[in-house]
Image (cartoon, rainbow, N blue to C red):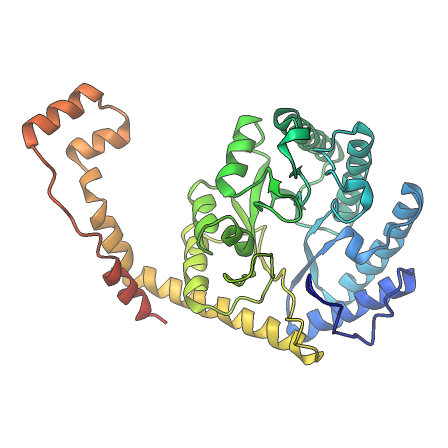
Length: 380
């Protein structure tokens, strides 16, 4: 479906009920897809795999039954859990957020849901656990205390860190930035905002980022921007490998098929020596008009081929060192002498003034953007 129409894809394995039997049927179909594609990992939202019940105890019991079924499917197929995450945005109780909700009762419910998923993730051998705050933000500043919201969000993360350490869990915590949708403004707006939040609250040693490029473009950046930025600061933990339509104003979660964008993204991963224990997962949906079951395979295979091509391109670019060499030359004024002192932090404002008085007006140096784009095209 999309925001303007009813579902068009009828799956024979899904009877559209919230029964345990249907949840298991959907899991069986998913693992059949995984094994036929030959993938080694999968991911899930808790409420996507297990239905919500009328009480927390009943919901947790259902989750335990589904977790046991997922564990059996993992054991049979060898497919492992990359990450799990909690859905804290669909149920009406979370209409004002979970941990940035002004009602402490709602905060407690969300925290209990996180605790349960942490336990399930551990049992299933999940290598990461993702926090995505779709409603951790606001719709109107008039009824919002942003500082208290952010303090409360940090408090939850500190609780999760303590619980993880007490229980001896070893998975990596990940935060997934997004600027908006469903909230008008989300507090984890983009990679820079999320990293600043983690640093301010002393959480940056416990978290990395799970970057979704469609979220990055919604924030007004290029597809690859948050991947490269978070990687350069040692904070790239995993990638929700999808894309969006620049002419559509919502999170379309399309399969990525652009070789150039995949090349730039994979370049950052090559530069940091890999992304384990994170990975590339497809947080994607086939289009509303793609109604055949085989379209699920086409979407996944096409996107996997795209990123494989991007990886090969990125490796060749670094092996031949033409583009990296051009960038290095562009910044060469900082490699020695006066520029090196700027990077080392050993220069003063007075020395900068004296340097300009002695050397006069700097010469104009072309950025040569077109040349860079032409060189990149040669690898496509």
